[in-house]
Structures are given as C-alpha cells and as structure tokens.
Image 1: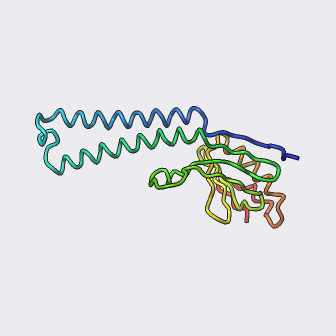
Image 2: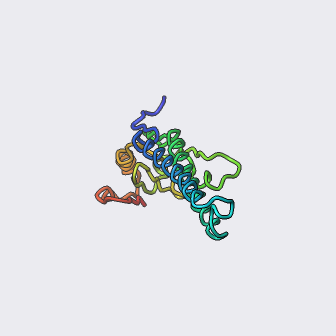
Image 3: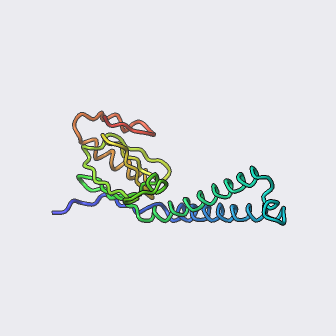
Length: 177
C-alpha cells in the first residue's frame, strides 16, 4: 500500500520565477548597453575602450553582468523542475545544485532527495527554500510554501524518540538533535 501524501510543492512561486527571469534580462541588457555606451566614446579600436587597463575593466564589468544575468535565468528555469513531497514516513524531492551549475563538469545539476524522518536532524524555511539538516550535508529544496512544509516535517519528527518536544516553540533554524 502506498503512503499517504501529506504535502506537495513544485518549484518556486510563479512570481519569484518571473522576477528572476526579469532581473536576469535586465542585467544582460545593462551589460550590452554598458559596452555600447563605452564604445560610443571612441572611434577606433584602442580608442573605443581607452587605455589597456580601462579596456580590461570594461570587459570584466560586461562579463560580470552577463554571467549574473544568465545565472538568474538558469536558476529560474531550473527551479521549475524541483519538487518536494512529504509522505507519512519520508520526504522526497528533487532540486538542482547551483555550485555544480556554476563550475560545470560532468554529471547532473539535479539531485534527488529521499529522507526518512529519523534521518532529519533539523529543518529551516528561508525565502522559498526549505533546508533539511541531516547527518551529511544539508539538503536544499525550492518550495512555494516552505513554512508549511517546515511545520509538517517538524510535526512528523516530533514522534521520533530522543527529540526534545519543546523544539517547536523556537522560531528560525530548528535543530532536532
């Protein structure tokens, strides 16, 4: 028999996704406009950018805003693929690894998460992201209603032996050890 599904969330809210895409596009447009404005100052190749140091600085600024804009758009698109499901006996989800996205390399940028409640040592809800503390590294999952997910996980973890029942009285980060 399948376990009862208590909670399900897919990615960030649409508003947050659109905000990240718009910010990304604004940064890309700014980078292109910056390069265009700098290029208007001169007429020939070296004069366009000024001295060699100014030329390097201009390309660094351009590159920084382009990379940041592309990163914002990628984060928004990848957040659409993440999900969180809380069942009677475990939590499962899928999220992407932003560090792996930044440094590249072989392998997937997504990570699957499957945790029984007795493996969970703490849980925190921050800005649409649920951070689940385990014995290993923390698991982060984008979640539309991360505060509700945090509350449900804490309620399920209270039934685990050796957990202080007063832990629910505290706000912010919660440690369940």
